[in-house]
Length: 365
Image 1 (spheres, rainbow, N blue to C red):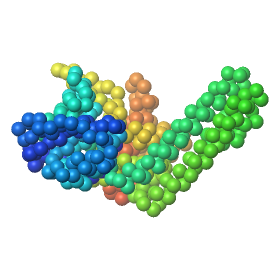
Image 2 (spheres, rainbow, N blue to C red; image 1 turned 180 degrees about the horizontal axis):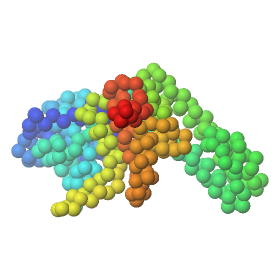
Image 3 (cartoon, rainbow, N blue to C red; image 1 turned 120 degrees about the vertical axis):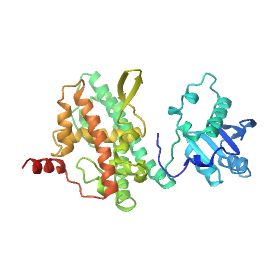
Image 4 (cartoon, helix red, strand yellow; image 1 turned 30 degrees about the vertical axis):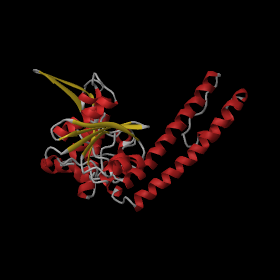
């Protein structure tokens, strides 16, 4: 879930608001609950989930604190409410068990719970910040490309599976060249069924190439800061652009190391008494960016990755003897890479792959 931007900034210093509104948004209707400064419900109802209906309902309302859950509609609804002068809080329901695991879960109860939590302390809702409109628009290109790649992969796997079940094996080739290289190897009886799929794969490949060109253009024109991130070998235009659009404002983190937890690349913990259990990574934040960072980590640790402090550290981690050490090393390198990219973005420094190694050698000399 994306959590960047300038909207939904919580202003807890205002104290208890005169009017707090909880909104439970669905595709057709939005359930609302208004409570006053004393916590009494003054109105319940619903309104259609359209721009015109919401604007008509809340434009005449005195500035109030609005609380809604993060979801498909929350970006545009939060922008609309902020435009009307309301204080907007977008709740991260994954962090609020009172909402996500309520025994009386329903539209009315959810709206009331949101209103009551926002009235008491907005921090109870673990508020998120949606990205700005321009970043939202540009990230749509990145995610559309990802959808195209996933669709192509699914079709390629289907074609290979169908041919294998026939007793034949298609030659190994890249996804970009698949539709050209395997056509002549398709068994004749399967051609009527599989040839149309190869045509679709070819069209998807052309669309992906066009998206790649658009990504390169955005990096060079609208987001030149991606150049600092691409200094790290293994980090291409796609990863750099996705990183910049997801984080959007590097100043929102007090320290670069805070980016790792934000992207879900740190282990979950469960403390109980004198026992501390370390679980798998939290997988919070944007899953697409996390996958890209993990792919970069695979390259850095792989046979073609150049020598660097990050590679050496990951290799030591991978040979530590711990359970699933290699897998853990990839995730750990992805986390360190996320921190490094933020530091390069903020500092604007020239990346030195072996800075730490050079410092150690100088100390030992």
